[in-house]
Amino acid sequence: MKNKKTISIVLGIMCFALTLGICVQIKTVRGSNSIVKQNYEENGLRAEVLKYKEKYDNRYKELEKAEEQLEKERQNSTENNTELEQKEEEIKQGNKMIGLTEVTGPGVIITLSDSKKASNTSLNVSDLLIHDGDVISVINELKNAGAEAISINDQRLVPTSSIICGGNIIEINGEKTGTPFVIKAIGLPELLSGLSRPGGYLEILKEASIEADLKTSNNITIPKYTGVITYKYAENSK
Amino acid sequence: MRKAISKEKITLTITVGIACFSLVFIMSMQFKIVNQTDITAIENMRETELRTELANWKAKYEETDLKYQETQTKIEEYKQTKQSNDETSKVVDAELEQVNMTLGKTDVEGEGIEVILREKETENIGKINADDLLIIINALKLAGAEAISINDERIINMSDIFTINNAFIKVNGQRILAPYVIKAIGNQVYLESALLGNGGYVDELKKLGHDVAIEKIDNIKILKYNDDIKIKYMN
Image 1 (spheres, each protein chain N blue to C red):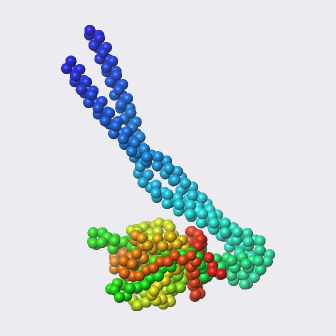
Image 2 (tube, each protein chain N blue to C red):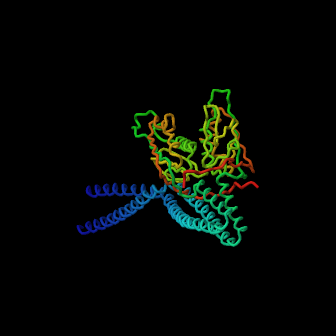
Image 3 (cartoon, chains in turn red, purple):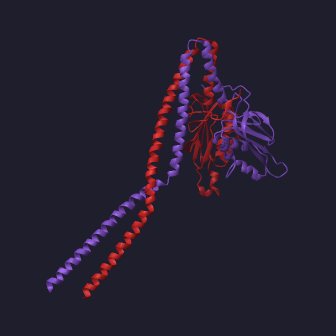
């Protein structure tokens, strides 16, 4: 009799524990059920992102081919007329200045990286990082020194380019890249390297203990802009 | 009597055994499901991010597609007009005009906004300087501005903005004076919200005490860059 009692008590406790466990589990699953549903949607989204990326990649390749073909056609159509040939040359030069073709020439390469100083040596960690303002100022100085083409981490600056910089990520032309920031500029190297003169912006950055390095080179290649420039709102005035 | 007891015991044991077994089975099943959902839950945090990504790629694809169609049309036009210089000239002119538009060598118009910055000189606040203008220009470009000018100096790819001797500002090497009038063509809502609101730079300038007015204009005209743009060093 005593034996039976002990058994029933043990069994009772066991069953209670098991039921409790199941209850907890069911609650958890119910909570995550909505997540599971969302997850299906997300997989669909992911697939669609990939689909559009692929579509874009293919179209972009086709566009590049078409642009080459256009250049050839234009050249063919204009080669027997000096006036037209001149205009053709103007289009080519214009595309270079806009940033739609790869260019080479003499210039400078500036490398900016966040301070290597341990963050505990400064009261404000933000002081040791490069900000958009810094990059914008360096670019502005390069333009002032007569830079003809500029790229940041191989993203060509075009008339519509903007710069967003947060921590060690920089976003140019909608593409994100990390530190170090390599800024290439084509122009007269003697003028462009004025940035590292005493009182120049690179000196100011160095004082803020940001690593800034400037090298001149006679052969710098700056890639073309990998996007397209289209107009939805602006029109040429009549 | 002995037999009866053992029979009862066996039934009890079997029943309890089955009950325990099914309970354990259900539990293990549940554990599995919970395990799986935990992994996906982490990935799930990126849903909004995925949505923006999708919108980005869609926009990029559509832009590229449009440009592709345009390029194809131009190729066709060149092919068709090959025989006649007069006809070819029209196609070349059209293309050149488009290039010049992007360079900033044509007057352009369209919907946009006008920002007027008036310095408050009386109070002990800094003047509006080149850096302020650079930040506003950058924000406008980020919001998709297609053409920008400051006091009718067109902002082109190689434009620079500097404060000279803490006294005046030079844009494209030309001296400009306050009040600063920034014109931008693009989506009015985007352009305006890039400057206003949380962290918007115009709001910061207002907080400092400067007088800033933004006006939406349905047909704003932006003048062309007046100098020649020359290149000497790049090939």
